[in-house]
Length: 265
Image (tube, rainbow, N blue to C red):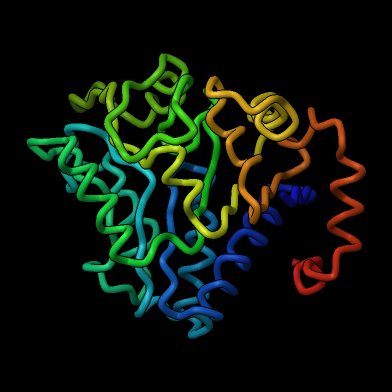
């Protein structure tokens, strides 16, 4: 695992976008795993800007998102399909038939999850999976006690997650956050060939320290990334505040030749 600490959120977002962009340039038919949330919005903005400038081509790319709320149709402004269309897909030259999210309105959720796994297999697996981490320690919506071998499935959301995401829903408009979601499993996520995790802000400092430097445990599903042999975690200084090996991480980034092209981003 590589842990990279950048001075601020903007530089962390820029580095994340450049890693994704370079992977797409190397493999134009990249299968990309995507995440949602406020942390990712600037990353998607940067990727869309590259595409608009002619520096990046998504025409052959396939995407699979980590998760979707149960019960929200695609046109609901709080659905992750709506989020992805708004923040990325409508802004780039991607074929939307190649963009995939779980269907939270499916009559048979178990069958929908099995179908989603099948679609990923048919696409040849995920080449690069973008990740964040929730305050509950989750990757995707893999809440505490999620098995490290779990696959795409329906889950119940914790009070911590409900409190974190609840403010996006407006009760005055009749909006209520679902308490269930469909999510790639931890095992599904670990199957990706490369993991790129972006975490910013001081409120994530405790949980990212637990995930990176604490024990691997199902109570913090994000700690499962310790098992992956090609994983980079990109943090700003605020998120990295509670790490004990910050000097080592900085030295490794400054001296490892594989990061030569990225240090000035």
